[in-house]
Image 1 (cartoon, rainbow, N blue to C red):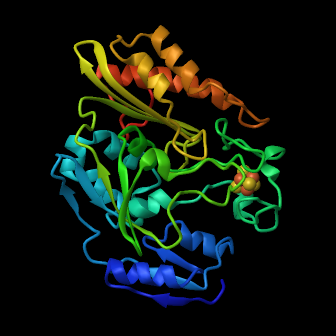
Image 2 (tube, protein in one colour):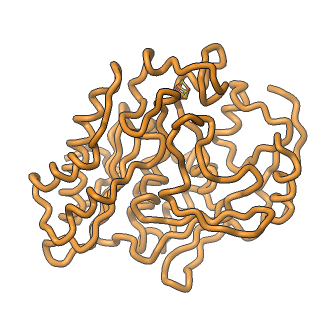
Length: 339
Ligand code: SF4
């Protein structure tokens, strides 16, 4: 591990000053991703800014509009088991509990979860090229081992996926990320927070280098009754999604008034297609309609040698998730068997 200097600011203003005056600074919160990356020499910060002592970022509050503001330093465990989150945004609680392990969830923060980096094998192996780690060096995943890689929104430069479960639920909930920078606070809708790889795969998000995340705001409509987070993976625990689906429906009897669907494990960001959601509006969820939704969500999907199976898997997951959400029978994250 390289040598680095260490700062422990006590206010958001101090933390912003630290990152805006030192281009090599990296933010540390739970450390569940960054410390791993430092051990592998993937990240070699010369200055670490420890955010864990900032005041005011560790709480969950109700907003004036009836939504929830979740501080960036709230742990994944605290968010998942908070009674207000469970009641108003159970989709978020469920997705959080689908992720990682209890030990990791106890340490990992909401802000860190948003900023976690891909688990592409080559990204972690500094003995191989990788455009995300070393711009211009190449992408061995396209011709190599790509079982966990993306099928949507890929580029010639990179086919990595975003690994988060939480972010998939936040995308379906149309949450907003609150960030602070030298010019003050601004809001970034979840749909615009993460980026597709394009020609700049090293840029995962639209967070500026001199900004820090201070909170996530979840709107009042959290799909309390009709939602599900369905995660398909190689092991029942401590495994990233091969495919996941966050589905939230507002129902009027057996008809859908409003639908939001986001896919995880398939792209460099949570994958939403508003036109697919519009297909459900005013309709009853049937297997045939779910097929049409899947067609639209997966339009343009492209598989590689090791991950083409994800296209069919995603189609089946979308069908199942919509049936679960419509019936009000969300996927259990305790008993992970998929019935
Ligand atoms: Fe690197 Fe992206 Fe290619 Fe993985 S998929 S090797 S992260 S460029």
